[in-house]
Each structure stands twice: as C-alpha cells, then as structure tokens.
Image (cartoon, rainbow, N blue to C red; front, side, top):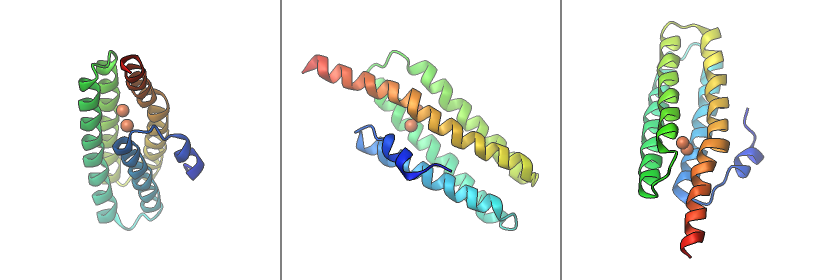
Length: 137
Ligand SMILES: [Fe+2]
Ligand SMILES: [Fe+2]
C-alpha cells in the first residue's frame, strides 16, 4: 500500500501532472479493495476500464509536454508507457479468467511500476523542464 507521505514526496510542482498522479493512487487503492472482494466482477471491470482510459489520457498529456519541451529521452519514456498499457491489458485478461493469484500479482506489479515510473522516469523529464526554465531565465 502506498502511504500518504510517499505521495507527498512525489510532488513535482507541475499542477496537472501532480493531480493526475494522485488520482492514479486513488484508482490503485480502489482496485486493491475490489481485488479482495472477488464477487463484484462488474465493479472491478469498470475500475479497470477507468484505469486504462485514465492512463492513456495521462500518458498523452505527458507526451504533449515532452514534445513541447523537446525532451531528449521522449522515445524511451513513451516505450515505458506502452509497457504499462500492455500490463493493464494482461490484468484485464487475468480478471476475465478470474485468476485471483494472477490478478494479485498484476496489481502489485502496477503499483510498483507506477511508483518507480514517477520517481525515476517522470522525475527526469520534470528535471529537464526545470533546467530549461533556469537556462532561459
Ligand atoms: Fe510518464
Ligand atoms: Fe506520469
């Protein structure tokens, strides 16, 4: 479980990105709750749909930002996003087969991946933006 102080630690100072990252942690917590309640497959499926749609929306925004600032590592970053979307699809499949063990593993993977992605990959492009701003000031 991701604690609130970890979320605080992840603030970048880019409002829309920060708000969206927070939203992800909320969706992941909801998924975790539904994962332990194996009866409610319709609710699980709808949260997963929302999770995937929100990921695509968030990644599109990051892509626009990285394109605008001509971020040198944009291709590698986008490849990471694509891996994440594929993993969500695998998660949807695991749910549809009602494999509790598999969906548990997937959820752990998504949580870990998301935390590391924010701390390392997202932090890098945000640092790039800050450096650019400083050099242009
Ligand atoms: Fe990202
Ligand atoms: Fe992000």
